[in-house]
Length: 295
Image (cartoon, rainbow, N blue to C red; front, top):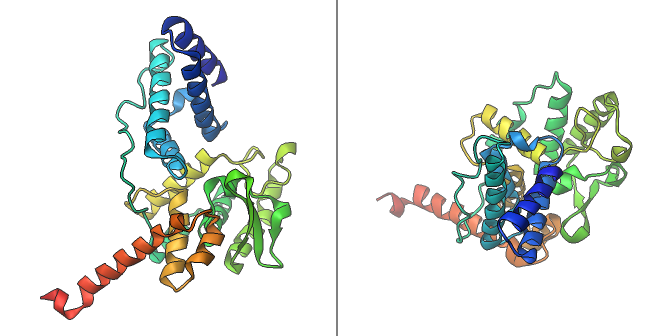
């Protein structure tokens, strides 16, 4: 991909006369996109759903205006690839710009999560790994970047905690359930040793079949596949499991400050969105079950 980006840089400078500052910003945005894709996906094979997954990923920490800017950059890049006959069509063409209003996050029910966890083919190495990944995402409320960077040396199972590195390289300890511990330990003992681990991934928990660290894009793909098998017709991503974790905690009486600490939110305002979800559910329950509401 770097060769294409380098050619795109010269195209912008020499043929389009784009300013140096704009080129620097474009390259910075494309670097984000390239890091998200990792080595699991060739640039020619990127489809619109891969770009949608990337936009969904950055929506957690970038404003809609920034998302729109990055999408415009990716659009220009793929238009260039079409112009150079490297690809036949621009995968960004039918992707809408991010809306300015902030919507409440999609949340899965406990039943939906249970169904997802029955969809893994546990006769395969990847199936056992994927079961452990999804259980870790949901049971600990981790971001996708946190689960792919999770280290074996930072699993404190005896104490019932794991250490994760969140945004801004800030570390925090997160409680982990015994059920999730069992799934991870089974994967570590029975599956991971079967792969030839690359030196740079020796301490990484979740690997691909080539023994390298999983990319965020691969985790998105795993979630999409399992969701489809489960027959769940929602726009589910790894972050949906994080939202579900927080919402279910709140519904069962957890303190908002405790949820904030577990999620690694710097501001309580970010966590308060789950209060809105809880109020919405309460409103639905009243409308459904309260006698005057039925009249």
